[in-house]
Length: 160
Image 1: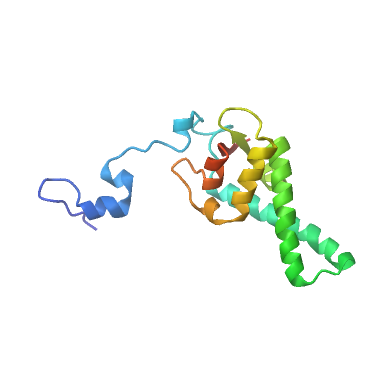
Image 2 (image 1 turned 60 degrees about the horizontal axis):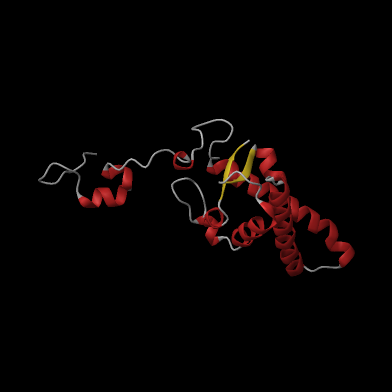
């Protein structure tokens, strides 16, 4: 496929719009560069795949805990769904606040850090978790791979 150019020698505006900023010649840098994170290794911004796997592990563990409790408490399927979300939120909140990793994140070799280097803490972890369980804020990412839940809580997910 041949790229078409305008009369001035540059790409057409539609090519830059559809291809994103990099096709317009704008250098956005690598993810995490603006925040001072290394390019690779420990402390580098974690890739999407490992974050997604960690999320599924954490959700699966929450589902397992609720399934084990469902029979003794007599929960119907609708109640199980609600309690699974509650279990996920509580474990994400408390583990992120106190140690910076959930079980899934630990198994995937990633962690949550505050940009100022301080511990995440209960308040910021709660804000991050509430936005995470709303789902939509976590789906809107910036060029540093930070979802709105990370931006709101001044955090980033990095490699261990």
